Length: 301
Image (cartoon, rainbow, N blue to C red):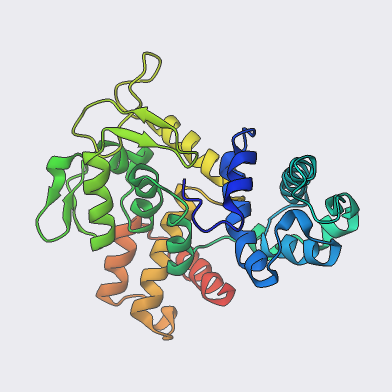
């Protein structure tokens, strides 16, 4: 876990050692750092107007998730006060009201149905391991299959020259250099390093997505295992709609948007390139559904 960006890192690291919410605290302190540096003030000394600005910067998708963050900052401030690090000795996080929580949630994030390329890249930055990055970027580039079989069964032997892969369904897909590098790294690693900095051994295999090397964990991953992991990611980063299908749809619409470049999908639906993109991501031949959802995607961005 990288704490080099923190303001007053020593105090924050000391507090994190006492907490079981290290991942969320890491996100909180990385978000608060620019504001703390601008004000030359630790967030434990923020007064209410500054706290409200910070709350908006969190871009939380629900009042409840915002309450959790403020609760952690309240505890951090108490920790600082007890150690004489607070300037006025007051915990101004106690002044946040119910109305503040309700008014400062990020409604766009709550309603987010599709990811742009930039939004995917921003999400990938949160992970310190290629294993989780693989779960995000693979479906976004059309690696999927029934019951996620293409993601589950891909091995290091399926990584071909020129950033191509061979899937268990027999498809040969060109992927981005970024995804190819992530696949290589995921296939090479022997340990999983969590966002909290914990290290867990992975079972030795040729699979790109390796399972944990424990007695209770299956030798080979399965759909249930991957879905549970995605649920944890969704909750940790507060994106209610995040999932494999959402990422796949987003990737397809992003590819279509890049090709169409402002042109109408209705007029160009039969273009070979449009059909190639649709077939890559799902082969869904429901023309009306594809056109309707694509237009919704374009209009939402």
